[in-house]
Length: 201
Image 1 (cartoon, helix red, strand yellow):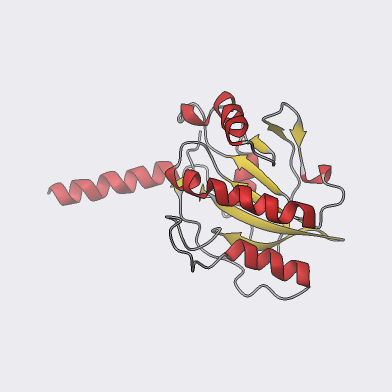
Image 2 (cartoon, rainbow, N blue to C red):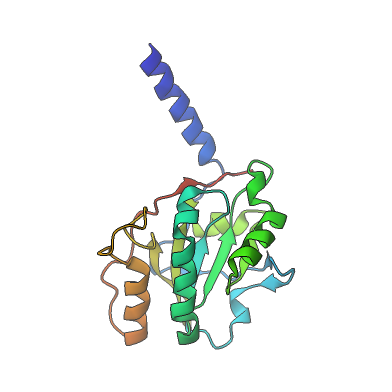
């Protein structure tokens, strides 16, 4: 009976965790632009980056242990690719009422303390998160700027090493961006994003 009760609790918790979620983008779709408030108080959007060849859009947050484990790797991606035309744009998707650690003030503090070189914007209405279909933190979307719009070229995890301890890990995002920069096909276009479920309003 205890096991049955536990399963019911997990099922109900899962339903609430994914409340408000949407199917979101698939590889090959055109991603919409957005206007979100950055930690510097200004508005950030894809169109701000006139010289960009594409974007590394990362849904991440303050509180999640997985997001924290990937933080320096996200910073590394921006250092590696921003000057090559693929800047990181980080978006916090969670409802800060449910997760106070993910409040805008705490986002500003985190960005300052860690010296982020990329925008860290809050999706207050969660509309961008729904449009993209992000379901975990961190969750990455690699976009390529084309005449048709910003095409989704990769969706999923940063790599296959959630603990950050495997020197032989497969770096999915790096491989995707490197392929785009060299005009080659991306071998792995989607993976499962492993992280904390997004807390919906």
